Image (tube, rainbow, N blue to C red):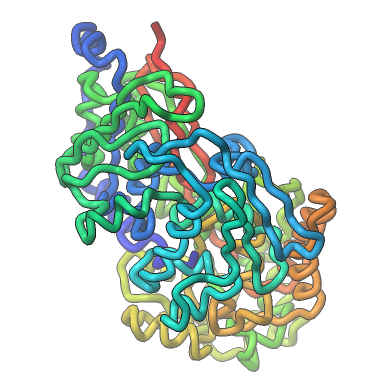
Length: 539
């Protein structure tokens, strides 16, 4: 998903660094307080929670809470992020990767007490399509056959979602796409008691309305902008959570750290790095979580440009000129890491390879000479376009400073968000800020959207076209029998795209968190989700 990455984040980090006053004190081990909450996990959530309706969720905090209330046909393995059975106990994929047939788990009940059927899956998905653009990620369902007609109001049902019997569902896609399975763990595919939801009308997903999922917890109480409390679902089909209640405190970083120090929280994340480090100095027994995220920040070249777009040597030269670590040290003080691949270590398809563009100004100068522009002579200024937030301005200034060192003249072009979006789609910018937050745990999410020629001007805003890459992307979507072969295709794609250099690789974020010494089995993932089902406390 392309997002206005770092919209407030970079400004916030810099502001906190400027105004930080040292935190003092030590970990307060309030045994009476801990004893009182020995069955309650208390999470300091530095996030906004506007809705708990899966169809409308677009904030990280909403999804973290929602993971405990709702389920899809598949879940994610918290270590590998590969699909696992959830509400579907098994499935079959046709050889052409267009037809998916699911067998539902027996004896599953909604929080309302009603049994789950295949019709509930169909109704839940079609509800998302009925909402259309009002649903936060309805586009994830669009590969299903008949969805455009449903969104346009031309049909009452989706032809590609068929109920075969109470426990069997068949889904047919317009085109082959084995990655579709990974998307089914996402909120738009979570299954609800739609009869209950319809009875609640516009109030569903808001404070005061009950949850209607199948997850291990039910919504107990929601005090808007303050706390969200979940209680164990005693009719849950699967293994019961170790703890019987979760309580999410919607807070800011400094207040949250005070609560953690006082023993009133068990975990908090979303912390600026300096507060994180200071807390550890004062409370060395705290546990640290550092999670590298599937969340990248980069610049893209418009490959239709007669200078920067037509010369691969020029684009490679600029990548060698950038010192990504220096940029991070100057601006983020450790909250990011250099972007050296599209896939993080441990992720599906990852294979360690040397990054081809380690900082090397001599190599950059050699490539400029080979391209016919020694020390940048004869080149027009490189225009860097970005939406006009200070958070993007500070990155652009640092990129400009570094490129100036090899003789590249740079012109900064801040524009409003509407002008920025229009310019991307129309190909009006020479080089522009971009970013990508992965929506589902499959390499297809990033590679197909950004580099397949069918996505020109839709999500492929560099107008990158390589017939070999198109072939590999299509082949990867169709490969159902040999996952190793499929991952090898993505490694070939990554290598080719790196060589073609349609991007200026910059950085990716990491999520910093702190936990009480009593917390165990907390699972943080590169998709920026936190899995709490197996959390337990030290006796």
